[in-house]
Amino acid sequence: MSRVYNFSAGPAVLPEEVLTEAAREMLDYRGCGISVMEMSHRSKAYETIIRTAEEDLRELMGIPGNYKVLFLQGGAHTQFAMIPMNLMKNRSADYIVTGQWAKRAYSEAALYGKANKIATSEDKTFSYIPDCSDLPVSADADYVYICENNTIYGTKFKTLPDTKGKTLVSDVSSCFLSEPMDVTKYGVVYGGAQKNIGPAGVVVVIIREDLITQDVLPGTPTMLRYQTHADNASLYNTPPAYGIYICGKVFRWLKKRGGLEAMKEYNAKKAAVLYDYLDQSRLFCGTARREDRSLMNVTFVTGDPDTDARFLKEATAAGFVELKGHRSVGGMRASVYNAMPIEGVEELVRFMEEFERGSAFPRFQHEKR
Image 1 (tube, one colour):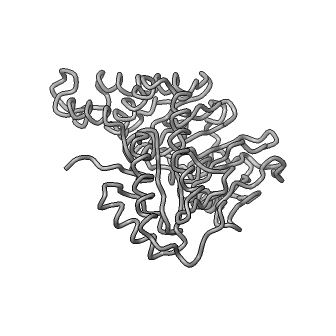
Image 2: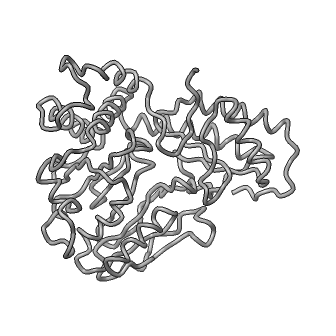
Image 3: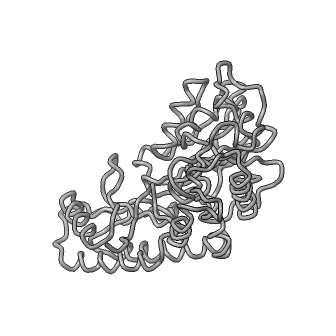
C-alpha cells in the first residue's frame, strides 16, 4: 500500500526523508551494531545524539545562552502542572483561555494557587483570539500563560499579548518550528513533539535560567522540578531516547530546508491553497476568524453533519486520512504541519472541489468568517 496524505493533528506526519534514514539505522546505528532503541542513554553515542539535537535546535531558533533546552516526558499535560509548581511563587498566575488546552492548563493551575482568567474567546466557541493589547494583568501574577496555536479551533496568536512586564509562558505544541520566533520574549516555551517536532513521547521545554530555582511549591516531586533536568542535561533519568533521536533528525531536516524563515514561507503558501478555496466555496466554510487563522490547523464544516460524515468517509477512501475534527467540535480539520507537502494540500482541494460539484448544498449555510 502506498503512503496516504496524513492530515492528523497528532501524532502527525513526519518527513519521509527522516523516516527513511531512521529505517536504515534501525538495526545498526552508524556501526554501533545496535539500534538507538537498545542504546544506553549514558553511552557516548547517545550523548552525541542528544547534544547534537540541542545544538541544532538552538541554531534553528536562535536560542540565547541564558535559556536551557530540556527534553522531557509527560507531554504538554504534565507541563500544565509543572509550570505552576515551579513558577507560582506568589500563588497567582494569569491565563488567556483561547481553547481546550489553555482551559485545561488554567484548571490545573487552580490546584496550586489563584488562576486568573484575564481573557477568553469561549463566548464564540474559541473561534477567534481576543484583543490582548491592554489586559487586566494581575499585580501579583507570577506569569501570563497562553496556548499560542489552538489545534482544535484553528486559531493562532499573530501578536503576543502585552503582559505588562510579567513573564510570558507559551504552549507552542502545534506551531513549534513552523516559523521564526523571538525566544527572548518568553520566559518558558514548550511543545509536545507529536505535532510538528517528532514522535509522541517527548516534550521540549525552553526556559530562561533565572526561572530555574529550588524555590518551588512544597511537595513538588523531584521529577517535576525544572532544576532536576537542567542540572543533568535532560539525562537525570532515562529520557524518551528514541523520540529525541527522531527529533534531532527533524531539526537537521529543517536546517537543510533553509531554516524557519523558509518553513514559514512554505507553510503560508500551503495554507493559502486551502483557505483560498474555502473562502470561495459554496459548500465548505472555515470556522476560525480570518485574521486569527492558523497556518498549521485548518478547520472547516459544511453546515450539515450528514454531509460532513459523507465527506470524511469518501476522503478517507481516496487517501486523505485523519480529517475528522476534534470530538468536542466535529466538522473537519486539516493539519498541514511542516512535513505535509504542498502537493498533499493541492490534491485535497481538488478532491473537495469534486465533492462539492457532486453535492446538494446543506440547508444551513455558515457565515463566511
